Image 1 (spheres, rainbow, N blue to C red):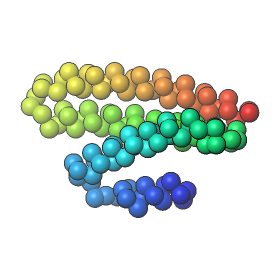
Image 2 (cartoon, one colour; image 1 turned 90 degrees about the vertical axis):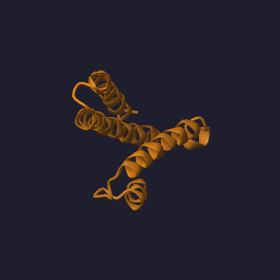
Image 3 (cartoon, rainbow, N blue to C red; image 1 turned 135 degrees about the horizontal axis):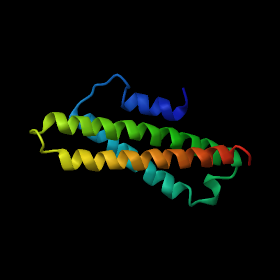
Image 4 (cartoon, rainbow, N blue to C red; image 1 turned 135 degrees about the vertical axis):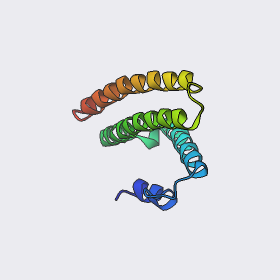
Length: 118
């Protein structure tokens, strides 16, 4: 298990607990980690080897593909917990988001493969 995975598992064990609060907190942590990456990758010292580019792109590809699943599951949950028809605009928007993510994941995976040749 990588250090990052161990840290995530310590705070958000895969098998739960799962609740509204834990779900929201996990999404907030993801947002903050992306903020950290945005700041860190501006620093010349944060990316000094091509392996870092490759490994980071690989992890981001994995994260984005998992986000596709999350978006789909949120659409299913919204349809389940709202009155019939009330979530149709939301589920349509989430479906469109998921399609966009599918394209994004494919592009990111291409970049990851290209980085392997650096």
